[in-house]
Image 1: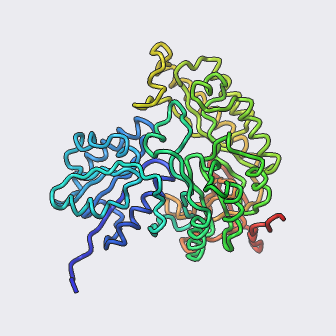
Image 2 (image 1 turned 90 degrees about the vertical axis):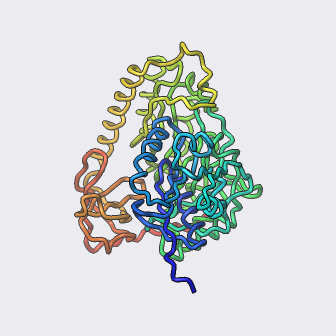
Image 3 (image 1 turned 60 degrees about the horizontal axis):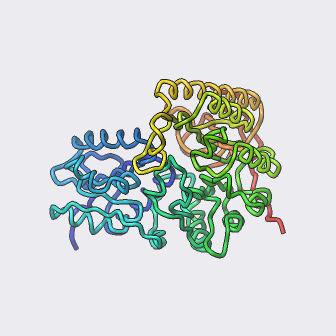
Length: 450
């Protein structure tokens, strides 16, 4: 038997929750081949940077980080770039960073062990082929979150929003079989995890040929031990009556939804090819709130899209108020190579200073609205799942069912436990709270209807 030390791998993850799940898959793939995960790049045998390509800023950040990682490398360390940026740039990444040996897109993680073997022999490898059958069903992810499980149910996207690079980096939409998703959920719950997050680019368009997203919500929500069920990110067009009804019938479905709006102007939405109007988006919000009256909504918004006028921007601001978003990820438009938005007339470009001013105003509106909503919650009691130690190490960070962040006193032994908490203070975005004595937070999933 060999006494040689096992090779080590460090993965640095950027971007969305799908990338987090993909990093867990990569860790699982390499663990099966004898690799040990490490928490720091210092001296790791393999360093992988799992990337996002949705905005230029994200890509530039990764290019800078690749340069910084040189100082963590040993003489024989192998550095690879994976994910959406790898898929988009392919061989160009090898030209930009000579110390990078691997470039692997989201459908190529199964090839990592072979590519790493080749890199040890001086070969520089690229795998950016789409595989429409790949769901990594036989790979056991190495979970990195002790409290919630990120479970992809769908890969790729068939919507062709004019600003979005995702169809180019993740390919066409395809869904996992419902039974495979449920099997993975059961495995996760057996480890003590009670919160499940279903992932897809337009997750509520899920369809495995036999079952739709309503079926998936009911099936996952019925798994014994699932206490909280979330998903991200839905598309407003895919809330069928069946899917909406499932929200009222599955007690584990949480009262929070991240529903990307992108713009509140019908004219801009049409240019974005979002396939809904302002009125249709707000009608969707209203319908969802009829079945979940306490629903908390967050969103994504782009300002400065080519051709956006002052009037268009004012419509976005008013839509934020009308929809009652509790928070928003807000961005200036970032043109992505290969997307239709880059072919819009140059005269439609919104000057950067104008887009910047709009962004700052939008942020102010969102923050003020969030603060007003949160102040109204002070003194209320709610269920909190403790997720981790807070950054200061003195408090615990937990979340409510509707995605509010709450800081409470306590030690690490309380991580992954539920408690009833009274909300005692707020910074405007984060709450402080106190445990309610002699009152158990025992909310369990409600029985299925029918």
